[in-house]
Image 1 (cartoon, rainbow, N blue to C red):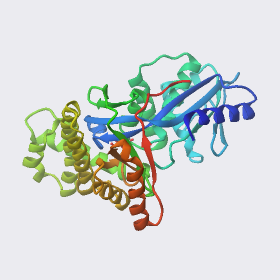
Image 2 (image 1 turned 180 degrees about the horizontal axis):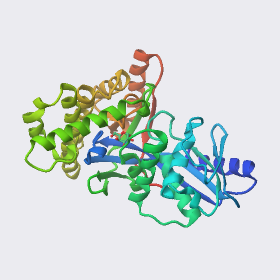
Image 3 (image 1 turned 120 degrees about the vertical axis):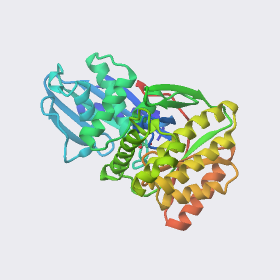
Length: 389
Ligand code: GLA
């Protein structure tokens, strides 16, 4: 479904259910992570983009403290009041919204002047691993407008991240939320998470991205993501002890230092640590290559990134590896890698746009031969970030 159709469906369903037009509607896109994997919470660098699919959130105020929240696709409604906002154990989809509402009011949503009724609907493929931040960001934009609250984008991103941490149980970084807010048409977002500095880097028309969604399970709340983050933090503490310079995060450690001092870490922790360290170097190198317009070399860094995930961070899986391996054999693909948390979800491919159909057909064929089912392939247009509609 195109965005316009999603919007129309949402507004008509909202009217039917609540008997009035929504007062505010906001939209937030999903994201693809292009280079820089698991670097955000290590205060490192990432190249990402907002995609041309996302989630809409429609809301109107209520006259009292009551709140109603409806998931527009399966028309399930959660009911609560502004003073009973808490993480839900059932209908857990509501946690991204209620958590965002909670932290928009600094943990005191009961201080909101009134409640609200809302509905959301999106067109990001489920399980692609990029929809929860989009939901948080359209929620926060719509609620800001509804309550007349003004906050800068980075603060809004952090509100969504806090919702993930405390209501959804995923200790994620800030990448997904920031990419959704800072996206720009035809451009990448280059993020520096130490200083929360976000800039757009224009891409020429000679390239496009493809997203290939594996059918492997992608659940970041089941502990694998958290254990990777923990290993990175343990490694940073170790390096802070052995290096004669300030180290707070793996951002502060170079590859040469890792090689010299890795012996003091357990084998697993050393393997985990080298991934974000290498990724930071690749993003900085990638920025120079993009400036020169050297897409081939940039794509090679994407392949290196995937190898690092596969061998060191171990956040890939058979299905993602198969997609990247298939991509490597196609000359019109510049580079490919897993995108986001890993353990399933999607791969991001940098491709020659004219060859998109051929690439999609080849990868689908090989994936099907191996796993029996077809991956969802879509051509991605880097797009405008979240906004009110
Ligand atoms: C998930 C998280 C992000 C980031 C990526 C990996 O998408 O939500 O914060 O850590 O994984 O780069």
